[in-house]
Length: 381
Image (cartoon, rainbow, N blue to C red; front, side, top):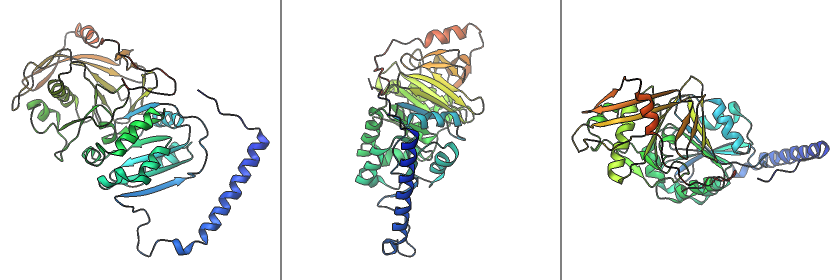
C-alpha cells in the first residue's frame, strides 16, 4: 500500500484556513442564488426515480487510503465498533448509503454518531430506472465506502439485479473499498439470497415443512463479492429463530444448483461479522450476539415439493467476539458453541451427545480455496 504524505503543522494550518475561506465563499455564493432555488412546494430531495440526501463536505479530500472489507450486520442497533471498522476501511472519507425506503436515518448516524467521515450521501431508490441513472452511478463510483440499509430485500432485487448499479457495486469492491449491509442489506450480499419475492418473510417452520415450495424465493447471480461465492446470509438470526429456515435455504440451493459446498451465515441483531482483505473474519456485538455458521455435511434425505425436509447431522458453529473465522476454509478458532442438528420430517432436533461437538467441527473442515491476498484488494474466485 502507498502511504499518504504528511503535511507540516504550518502547511496544515494554511490549508485549513484556505478551506475555511473557500467554504465561506461558497456559502455566500449560495445565498445569492435565489433564482435557482426549488419552486414553492417542490421536494428538493426528489430526483427521477430516487430521492437524494447529503451531509458533510463532499468536496473534502479523503484523509487516508481505502482498504477492502465486508461488513455483515444482523439488523437492529448498530454495533459501534464494527461501523468504526468500516469507516477506517473507507479511509474516513465519503460513505454512500443505498436504500429503497426511509430517508436520512443511516446517513445521520454515520456522520453524527459514528463520526470520522468527511461526508455521507443517501440514495433512496423508488424504481428500477435509478439503477441506470448516470448521476447515481457516478455517486457510487466516487464512494469510499458503501452501506446498504435494511428494509425489503425484494425491492433491492427488483430494482438492482442485472443493472449497471449491481455491476458498479461489484466494481467498488474490486477497487479495494469496503461494503456493508444490515438486515435486508445483508440478505443480498451473499452469492445466494432469500429474496422474499412473494411479499412476506418465511418463518423457519414453514420453510422446513416445504423447502421446495413457492415460499422459498431464492435468488442468485446478483452480487459477486469475494469470500461469499458459496454463501447465503440471514439476519435477525437468534431473535427470530431462523436456524431452521437457513438450513432449508441451503437444502434447496444445494438441490437446485448441484453444490455440496454451500455455507450459511446467520447474524444476530446488534452484531456484525467484519471480513478483511485476507478473508479473516471478526465479530463485533453490543449484546453478546453471535454469527451462526451452518455447513451441511450431506444432502437432504427427503426433499420434494410439498414434503417436509429430512436431513442428518448438520453442524452449527457459533462465532463470538472471542472467535476468529477464516473464510478461505471456514475454520473457526475459539468457537462460542458447537452443535449438531438433525431435521426429521420438518422438525429441527438438537443432538445431545457431547461427542457431537467433535463431529460438528469435523464437518466444517472444507478444502482450501484459492483467493487473492493483497492488502488492498479482495479477489473473487
